[in-house]
Image (cartoon, rainbow, N blue to C red; front, side, top):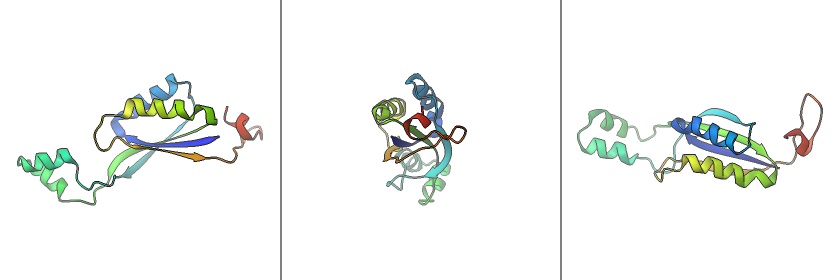
Length: 124
């Protein structure tokens, strides 16, 4: 079993939830997150600042600024990882910086608290 963690744009969260549901993934978590990628300057903000937009110039001046994101966590059997990655990627890919990241981690076990079931049956 695997844990898939995706960091996506705030404005793509509803489409992400729908894509996961449409792909047959009903259970997942979503958390508020703040962060930034390796680029310190947003190209659109830089262009607006260059055009004389005062608000953009003020934002550009704060290179340490963090941006609001959503972090989605899904635990699935190994064979569903591709489905989850495709569902998330398909609605979040714009081709621009900030589209997000997807991390896939091995998970050694899971336990359903209500029944005590463990392993794959605890996530199905």
